[in-house]
Amino acid sequence: MNYLSTRGAGPVGLDTALRRGIAEDGGLFLPDELPQFGIDDFDGAESIESIAVRLLTPFFAESDLQDSVTDIVAETYGFEVPSVKVNSAHGEFSILELFHGPTAAFKDVGAGFLAACLSRLEGDVSRPLTILVATSGDTGGAVAAAFDQRPGMRVAVLFPEGRVSPRQEHQLCCWSDNVLSLIVQGTFDDCQSMVKGAMSDAVLTREHRFSSANSINIGRLLPQSSYYAAASLQHFRRTGNKPSFIIPTGNLGNGFACVLARAMGLPIGEIVFATNENRTIADYFASNSWQPRSSLQTLASAMDVGDPSNMERLRRLLGDAESLRQTLSVISVSDAEIEATIRQLHTTSGMAICPHTATAVHTYNAMPDSDRRGADWICVATAHPAKFESIVEPLIGVTVPLPEELALLLSRPASSQLIGPEVASLAAALS
Ligand SMILES: *Cc1c(COP(=O)(O)O)cnc(C)c1O
Image (cartoon, rainbow, N blue to C red; front, top):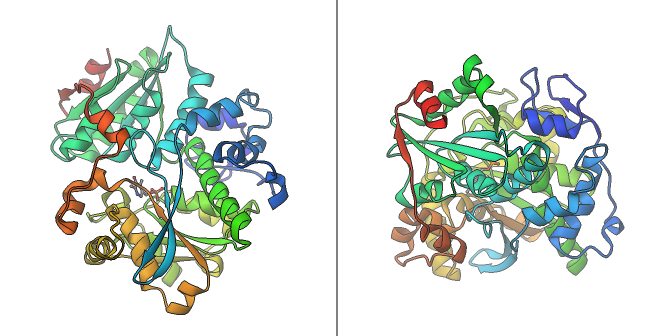
């Protein structure tokens, strides 16, 4: 299968697209043609793993990895992705829990898959590939967990001093020797420019083999379609109805993966993106004018994105705002609405949800009655509430029990280095 840049460059094969992350013209890779599936193409595939293998195999045509799809998928999903029924004051819906991976957020799926692919393509014990990640939270932990202890691979995680919660910091610092945890005396933007600086530094790039694992890599996007495929097929087989999804959205990677699954023929009804107060996508849908801006800080911090990069893919696949509005919708949710939703769902259903998941549940609650009853709704839960305990616990008045995977991480010893906000400090830490 060939992959083309959203800006025209290419075609390249999957392996090159995975290695490069971003196309040479600055665009994002997309397959030149989407495979098409009927429901019966998945006959006999019950588990999420076996559905994922059928869905993803065509994307590996002519790749060096084409005989490893089953193993790659097995390494991606070492955990359940349950769909849980909720009886709320507003009606009955389901929550698709994407947070049972090693760092309790959906990013474990994409990071795990990319790590399984890249370590097979690029792992070299004599000259490790060094993955550089700047993070303000969830991404760094998922990437560190995915590459932890993989031979021939190394990760440097950079995050800003004092800007992540103690629990989050622990998750960024509790890994084996091949993960370097670097606390930067600066901001998230400093971390990002250090990564960019190192990757374009002539001396450093001779010394190290660098790569990145950011969310625009096609290797993080594709596997995310597989949980939508599995959830929609399982629902359709049980009820004969296509479920509709409400997806907490920031950079639009998770939401776009659902759009891809529907475009490939999976039984998915409506798709609604729930954003926080960062209104770039919502304003585009309403006004036809694309106006990226700086991000606002909200309670759903992993969705604080003012210039969502995957919009470039969405527009390439489906066209501009006018066509997008035909098959997709967007709701922007305020911090006050997030808080009220967390409180209310706990009161009525005894269920704790994270602030990101709350944007989806609010969207369900706020729909006109007829829309709510007119479809089988699945709200996507992107992180475990215990990851955001300082927001959730005061609202619901009880402690959120730690899930096993997080308890395990928090019991491991942590270590890190504090470095200055310059490329030279990063270079010294890497040597
Ligand atoms: C990253 C993240 C999101 C946003 O996902 P996108 O793919 O960037 O839209 C939502 N919730 C959580 C918990 C996240 O970590």
